[in-house]
Length: 124
Image (cartoon, rainbow, N blue to C red):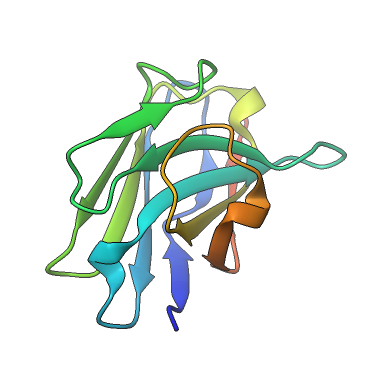
């Protein structure tokens, strides 16, 4: 079992930055690839980034490439999403999730564990 708890969301002006954190419980954290998803009102859940269990590989959706960086610290059982140059269209609830599969565009069904989500609002 892995439990995930996100933090770090909030209200930020366009062009601003935020860093989301996702703290995981359990001893098997490094066995899982981790993904960040987001869901805006009325839209489908979208995967924005993923990172391998060891942290050596990462992929990004085109909509966030160059602005978001996913990283992890397995000693702290934590995965991060650094977001810069935020845009109003980045407004969404952001979720972290754990999977035994790695990739972008995976169905949410491939992810075994989910956090509760953290709201990110980009507005002036």
